[in-house]
Structure formats: C-alpha cells, structure tokens
Image (cartoon, rainbow, N blue to C red; front, side):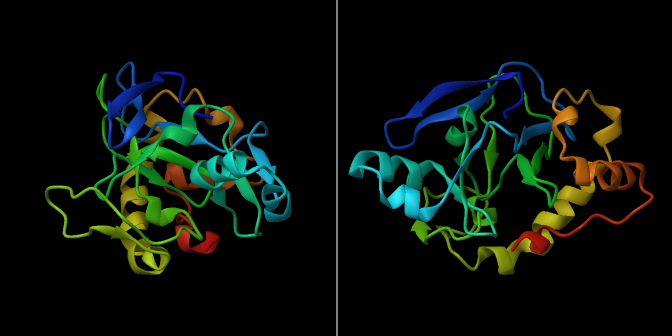
Length: 192
C-alpha cells in the first residue's frame, strides 16, 4: 500500500506515469508496505493468462524469493526507477523515504532491489555512471542500500507513520528495536 499522501501523475511520453507526493513526506516515513490486498500470483497462473494480461503482470509485478509474483493492488505499481532514489527498501517488506520528499516530487526506488529483474537499459541520470539495471545489482549494491536504510531508520520514530499498522506481525518487534537503536538492522540481502 502506498502512503496516503501520494497520487499518480503523468511524467513523460517516454516514462508514462509515476507516483508523486501530494504533501511533504518526511525522511524515515514508510512510503510503501506490502499488504494483504497485494495479489500473489504463481508463474503458472500468469502463463495461463492472455497475452495482454500476461504482459502487464510481468511489467508491474515483482518476484518474491519463493517464486511468487506480487502485483500491487494500488498505485504502488507505478513507482518509477532511479539510480538515485528518494525511497529505500528494507528487509521488512516496506520502503521508507530516504530524504524529505516535497509536495509534487516523484517517489522513486532502485529497481535493482527487485529480485529476478531482467537486465534493462535506463534513462541516463545526472550524477551516476549506472545506465543499466541488472539481475546482479542485488549482490553489487546491497551494502549501499543497507547504509541508506540504516540512516533512514534514525528518523523512523520522529515522524508520523500512517502505514505502521501494516508492518507484518513477525517484524514489529524487530522494526521497533532497529528504530530505537537497540538492535542491528537486517540486510536487504537476506531477501535475496
């Protein structure tokens, strides 16, 4: 589920649409969390669909570690990629704002964190030499993503968290301990 202060807006002909903040979303805020309304699909089921449905599912779904594809039920599926994202993934099935996201600013994540992604060329971005997302990005950049998440967790308890109630039961105590600084954060690599 996407943060309630977001909406879909047109980006460009090349990109299509994206997810934008409608109000300030402070650093440390959960901006997306996997919830019970997200569709869990097997590859067998996806392959049984018509060509148009199948293409959309593969375009918008991501692969879980157990071989299940997750298709978001809300506008989370329109979150675009950036090599300099303003949102960071965690090992707890949610993303946080890695910086203050201003009203009208697009929310972005690094698609390299999506397991099983096929290699693809990206629109070039100023300030980065990366031009391609690869299936190996997970193994190459996890330490960078973990550092972003550790820094972001420092703000977790200082900001309003409208999606906190959706944290999966098995992660609540761990997330609270990480946010309080009493336990180390699990690496996103644990999801690989």
